[in-house]
Image (cartoon, rainbow, N blue to C red; front, side, top):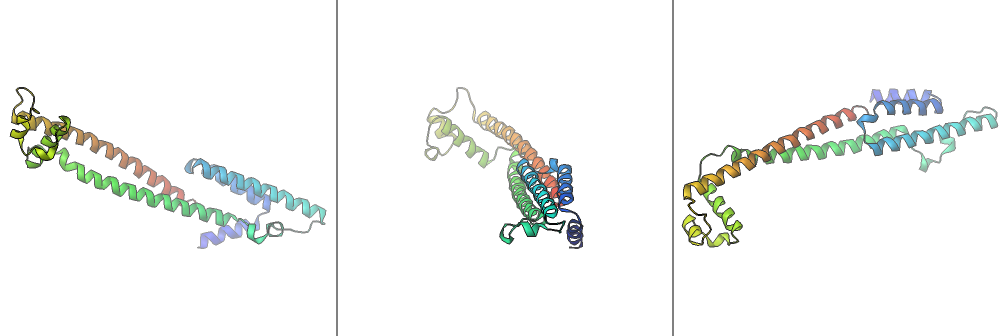
Length: 207
């Protein structure tokens, strides 16, 4: 709270034109940390502040150098202050951070689900069932009509000279390789999301 008050006091002590210039200088320093739409909005906002500052100076000259503030030029229901702008940006960034956290949690859950399939090396009952279902789908046969490898062979879904052992082992190796690729893809997604989270949290400290 003390930091906010000191900023308010500093802004209040500045002339309107200096206030707008200071805001633009700070904005330029953080331009790479905010999205283009937000940067463009704040630039437009600062331009409006410059115009209002010019209007104040003009009225001071016309009215004998009497001090006018932005409150004299803008009605209460139209006032936009730097504090409200930064507050809105902070709230928007906080929402973005929460979305990224949810995405990270989802990717981590998927990683936990894929990992056991990456290290699976034994042809168990689950692997046998998956292999039979996969071959049924490839052969346009309803999986629920095939209960075991013998029925699969009886329907002509096995390749010539393809033994039961080779059939299951080939499936397991293909599946494991595919899961490893999927795992690495998810790891890259997690790394990108972590970088995004750090960038957003760093941006938050600037508001």
